[in-house]
Length: 102
Image (tube, rainbow, N blue to C red; front, side, top):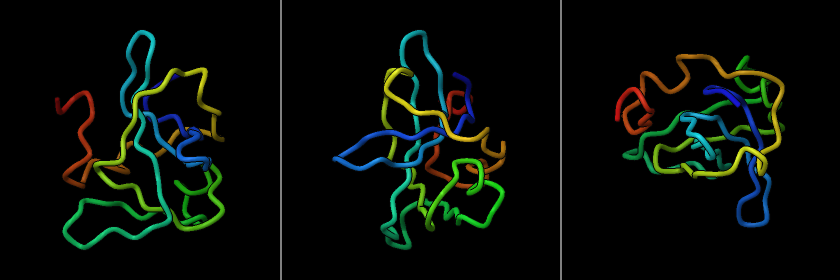
């Protein structure tokens, strides 16, 4: 599994879209999406199903990726999406720490 891979993660009895943002030996860190719009002061990126990024999952509805919504998972616990997300999806937004920024 590689950074930027689109995946699906099971959280709170829901399957959520996620993007791999860090890879370690036995675990990967993902930024996962939610349908709930965050407050304006929270770093977030909206991805819609019509966009190139949205088609990589593929998404069924608009999804917010919030900087605090990350999780470590075994790669075996994730279902692969249809491709890799754009390199710049999170780059312009504070709050999305990746390995390069740590």
